[in-house]
Length: 228
Length: 224
Image 1: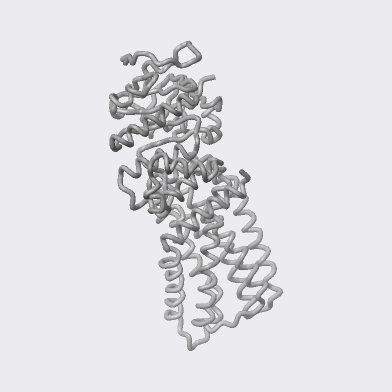
Image 2: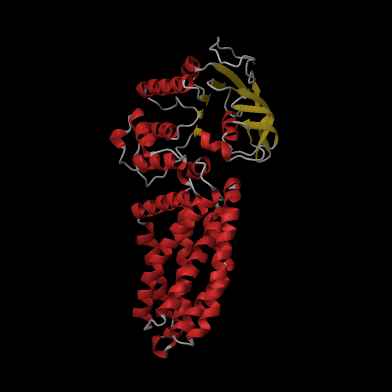
């Protein structure tokens, strides 16, 4: 069973079909890169999979849960790293992480491990409002790690990261995939993203080109190819 | 995780934010006190009206301050996409409702203590029938917090949220205001036994508003 399966998925932003009939399969252990121009629907696709944008028509399943009827259940198993941190300004880095971990039914140890993994120990007791932009990006990733999610959805994860953190991110994503977790990332930083992706799908005008998984059940790294 | 444990997690988060930001302590409580003082100035104390009007003025001041508390509770969810984070957290909508309502209720309870002292000092009121006063305060606080939380999420994400919340909440809590004022009047200066029907009304309002919140908050959060 694919981790994510969409057929003719349509999502509206107002009246605008940001997803206009997308087909997508993502298998366990995949690192799927979503590329495409600005406004093509990559972010909407990620938010749809996360259940933040309702499905207007078509079908979408995440871990077998039908998003047309239940957008909440699958959220225990996924994490979204978006343009915003989803954190509280008046809470410290550690408090934000522990809240995210506890909400996902994970122990404080998971939050503390994420803190160390993203090298946020020095700012652990600093309020979110006082973090730099780069530190906020790292905190977003740490929140996703603290949730120990089986599906990681990342929107422009390489943007705003220094080289060291970028390497850490790549190692985390490759490590997650090797553990059988699934990664879907939307990116314009194709040099970095293609280096770790096992598949690439191009999103254009709300449609996913090359989004259907290969027939093999076990994902294999394959030459990167953009199908327009 | 049970709903109550999730609710406690959300309430602890909201109260920690308030303790850190001190908005409740430095803005909402002073606002309530200022309203009480203004009423005292507006109504001539020499005519002996203040002690008789004290119950209504107390609850009016509390209600106005509670609007600020509700707006504040949902304002913290606007920054950094925190409301999306709350949806993504996987927490049960009913638990989020109970947690947020509990945090607002705790803030209102603090405010009631301060305003209670204010009424005694400024309006020359002598507290009597502590049980009636206590039960009235508990039921009214739960009803106000629960109703405010429901309408807070209805208005969440709208650009007109801060002005819309009072328009939605004030009519909805009219029975609570009426019941709480009448119960306080009976307890403080009237016939104490006449307070009990009003306390029962408040209890019904509290139960009803909590049930509506538990059922409706999750879907409203998804659509917000």
